[in-house]
Length: 220
Image (cartoon, rainbow, N blue to C red; front, side, top):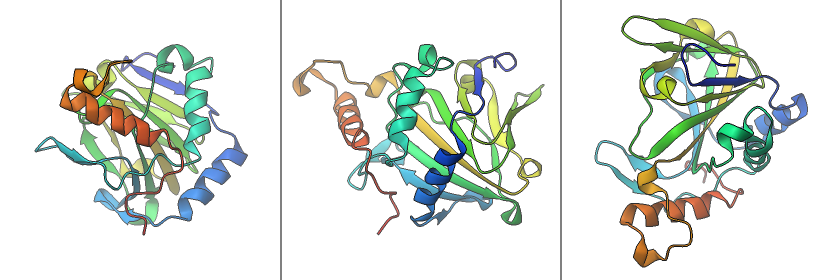
């Protein structure tokens, strides 16, 4: 799916019912941490202070095991391979939205210092909408259960995105993956001495992420 806002790709039934069950079972074995606006979260990735532009990865142990097959599918699926063949996530966030908590996420732009152009989300358990807004327009893009949505281009840079309370009708779990900006992307084949401080950090984040046996940052 493309169109308004330009830069939104939607793939229905990206994961099967069996995969969805396995993913949710794996998540629910780990603790959930309270987040803003009634959400619960699980973070796999570096600890980042975006205001001061500092990051630490001492507690980052890798992406969760269920995500390995998802990342492979992003690279090979006929509807995503052209767009995501080079997508290398270094962060994954599970967000749990429930109607009884009034869960939502306010209009925002994702960080553009560390997180790269493409934002990738798999929607599980329930249907919802991702709403994009500018000062003049609003567009609600459906996120069916078990679908994939990719945000890039103007949808990433020009339109704010949000999930509104009225669009949560039960439980909905979003699995969002993020890649590095060019500032942090290491040059293939370069030695550490040939890389910048940011590129060396990016190389280490990629190395850890590819473990695919990680625990959430809040796990004991």
